[in-house]
Image 1: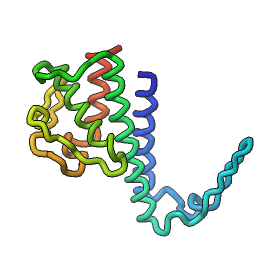
Image 2 (image 1 turned 120 degrees about the horizontal axis):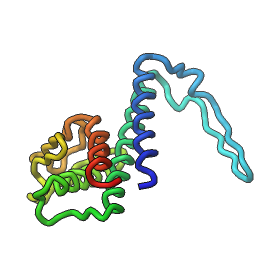
Image 3 (image 1 turned 45 degrees about the horizontal axis):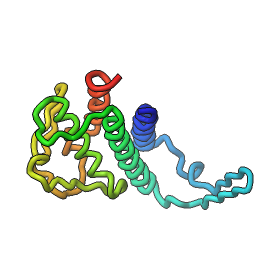
Length: 170
């Protein structure tokens, strides 16, 4: 549970950076220049012109969002494991529903964090999940690409974290 705050801070920062770029506040010419990092025996030289157009910047930031969202989802599931909350054979209680939904979101990102896909092939997981005023319908996602609206929007992951910290672990 040590890193859930960091994971969600990174996700919030990724959203803020994306919004900043959408508002045209990032100067691509200043950002996309050659850059060298040195330390000890390490020298890392990053090239300039990684991004050709402002649209390339937006796409890169959208990819960054997906990756940080996946990292936050994986971290939230890891916290659930560390709290000793096991995936129940029968999903009955509100806690079971949180656990099942968290596990399924994590699974979507686990095998390819940059291009997440659902992998809900067992009927017991293809269902509606309801906990703490959150409703997630995974009845028909099957193996399609993950989209934020599948869970009700990107804010739902933040709400899931709040639910867990309020109701399931300190």
